[in-house]
Image (tube, rainbow, N blue to C red; front, side, top):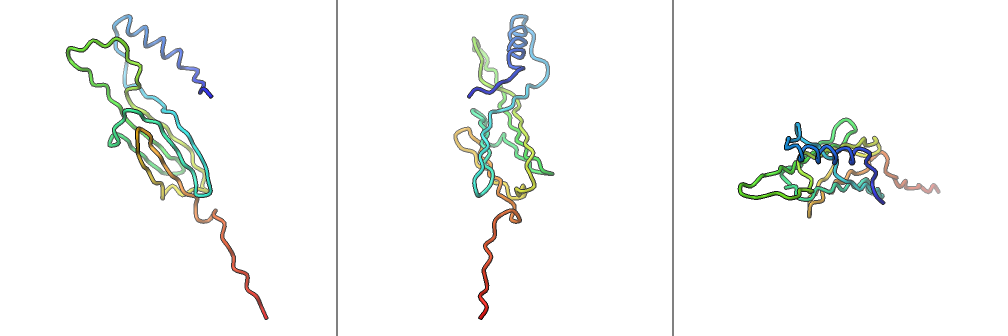
Length: 138
């Protein structure tokens, strides 16, 4: 399944024009990285794809019902190198998600492996099923 992005063609056209005219892009670029969100009995699992991003450049904030991820992959221009094509994503990456109160944002766990940030948001204790012991009376 391909993700539809109505602004992608416009962005590509702006980039081509900027390259053709030799004018740099104005301001920092912000990209929305692809995300997978899964749910199981333990809670939500959010997978954020950040290829080429160093783990120390990733920031995760959970507050007031919102889980936000911000990361940066700076472009470091090397002297004496001719760049013919740059299609890799560079700049600032940001995504945020509204998380229902049935999940506990105070207990989010984050792991980063092979360019994928894996966030686990457990279900809130109040929403987990509780087994009730039935008392037998004589």
